[in-house]
Length: 164
Image 1 (cartoon, rainbow, N blue to C red):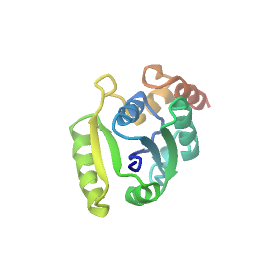
Image 2 (cartoon, rainbow, N blue to C red; image 1 turned 135 degrees about the horizontal axis):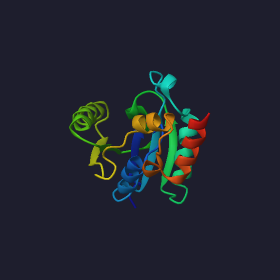
Image 3 (cartoon, rainbow, N blue to C red; image 1 turned 90 degrees about the vertical axis):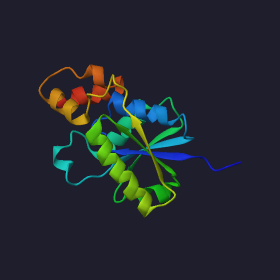
Image 4 (tube, rainbow, N blue to C red; image 1 turned 30 degrees about the vertical axis):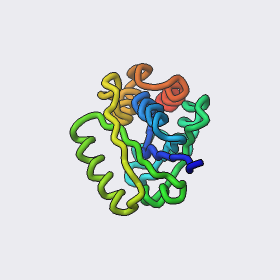
């Protein structure tokens, strides 16, 4: 029997959107396990809606019924985290051309740093292509309805945080 194929789906996930969830679920078609890897990013910590720990818990709630998905936080280089987790794939969703350029560049650099790490870039579902965590935070902060963009578990947390 071969080793399980582990994929990393890295990002900030502040908050996790339905677009993120779609990419993770689609990755299960070609990975045995998907680790939703929440990055510690000191440059965006001041603008964050949720702590890294809260984001990890939110992801766990959103995927509670799927044992092949786990959430974990990481710091530093993604390739180092991939080595520690035994991951051979990175899965990234893209919404458009700008995302594609950035993700292509990151894929080449990650493979250069860890030759056994492949990147799979999935085009986002058109239904979610206009949604970003940044827009969700802005809309929620101004009292707008973000229900169409979030799962119920995430929506509950966003509404609670936006109300404070």
